[in-house]
Image (tube, rainbow, N blue to C red; front, side, top):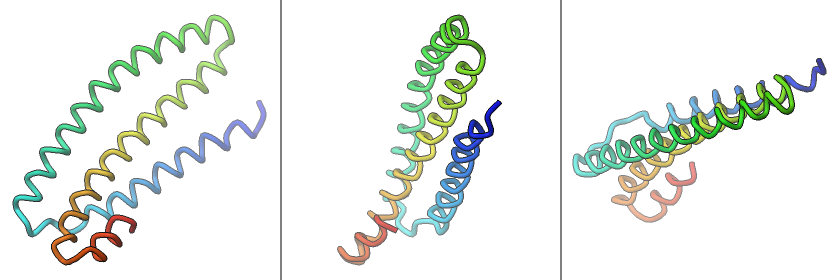
Length: 123
């Protein structure tokens, strides 16, 4: 098998690990504002519930497509599709959680002014 096949796999793993590190950095420091923290938790629970429901349908669709790919194109295309689906789901999950945490940090920073909130949103 061609060695170039491993490049996308390792790239996806590296990018997801880097995203996890950035997410951990973002989540340091608890909110001092109770109301913002409560609203953030409600939004986070809603986002996770939505993602879990969405991923259930994606899993069903991906399983059907994987079976069809295996029948018509073979195991290598099926594995590539399955890995792509898995990494896509991981990226979507991490992205949503980072977005929710960033919004809550930005809302907290807005108490100190526009520039502080602006730089928090883009850091």
